[in-house]
Length: 453
Length: 79
Image 1: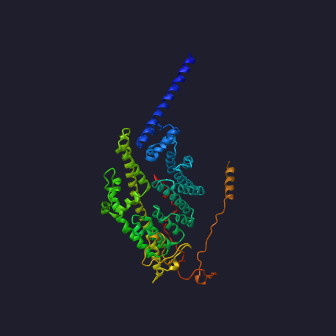
Image 2: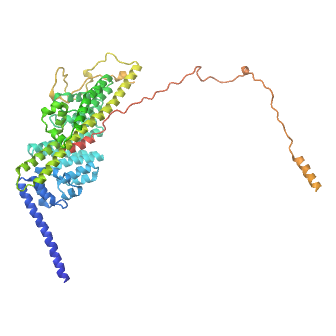
Image 3: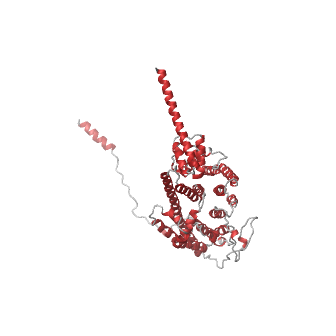
């Protein structure tokens, strides 16, 4: 009797296992059909739900990855750590590694990233994150190795993919190169940092953002004329939409280091004149945001209308919309919309609407955070400017007490221009060359020998 | 009994100390002009404060130590 019971139990377990497998197989087939019908988001949700707490088999993993090529990884953003770990595909490993980096769980981050195969399209991005983790840990040699490999790997992939995707690999490649420069800066190897910054082409999307970093390296080397010259690049009409409050304080600091106190004070005064209305404008924008998607809608308001309101706001919007994340999210949103409009019989319209709503809220939040970050930055720098102003005034007062105010100061000379052997020199008298952006230098004579105590 | 009391009185009178009265000089004269002190003058003649090096206070000015935040933000900006 016992034997019969055992056999019955065995068959029961076996049949339930088979039924589960066959159910999964059925779902896989359904998801695959949806994928073929271009109902990508519905297909992802259909198959993704089945593997929330179970690692997918090889076929399912393969299908999920194929779908993700069309949908992006947004779907998994709401997954918890356990669910992501169970999913066990490179895309989810990457999301987990990023979370671990932000939570300072470096060991687990590295563990996740090491799982991503070399041949995978996300491998360069994994190396970018890996290098960042090592940098945080202070393992600089390992960080440099990871970023150098990332740069090479991304470069190899650029020529193999279509243009839109190649742009993604270009950004990854440049990010890795810039990060090496940043790490050199952290190690106080400022010449090494400058060398790596030079590897970023001027046509690059990233280039305007690294001008300030290059200027910091020049400043730390004591090349104050080069620092001011580099920062003057932001005054070019070509870079009108880029404004960094930090550039202003660096300029003022450089004048201060050259003991040109009046020039430093002019920069400080101009900062308050220029940025106070900008800050007020931004504050009023933030205050009047009543609708749920105010910032999202602002990103799509016609240029003419935003310009009418404020040119500065228009430029800030341009900065946000140029970011890769914004564009990737936008592409995903377009893809969701397309699927909604297509209205296939098998598409899950309710789910699609919910994904769309979630994406819009995410983009709204991203734009909002960018603007808040900017306004906070203006105020932080304003405090630092005030501090510097006190120092400048104090030094000026000391000069008056010692009766050492220099008269007829010589403003500049070519002798004061420090340049590398590979750099050519042009006086730029009545000239403005766009291709020389970022390589200007002033020839101001330091007054410190006369003035410093 | 009377003898014992007598002996005690005699003994106490023998052991009792004699009362001494000290008397100080009732008058003494000091001639300050006649006093002579040997030594050398080390202080300057008029009142003065020795000049010391004044502490120069410097404010901590804005300075970049690293770009770690930018590295993290760049990752966030990708996706």
